[in-house]
Length: 124
Image (tube, rainbow, N blue to C red; front, side, top):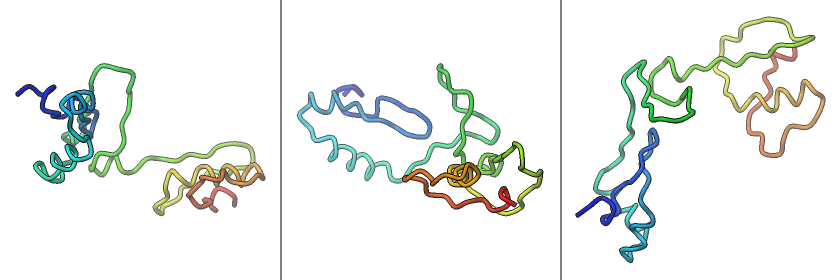
């Protein structure tokens, strides 16, 4: 049976597999059931590249974060501008802290969907 007729994943975009929903519908199947059955058959799978390698297809993507390797889980966050003194923060921080920190620097409320906490080191 061809991949197109069976509902087998049609597209891979690191690290995810995407189902061919048109083929699933054409076969008269329920996409949610197909996804559950496929997940049960395959188990939990995370596709990861070798350290320092990048799974690249043709396209405009120039960088990727999210591999399980240590070098890819530590991304620098840099604040620069008038009144911001240079310093290095040696504690774990998260990219979601950027929006509330910028908001505080600008003296305005954080966006409603902001989830992070203000990086107080930037304000000192």
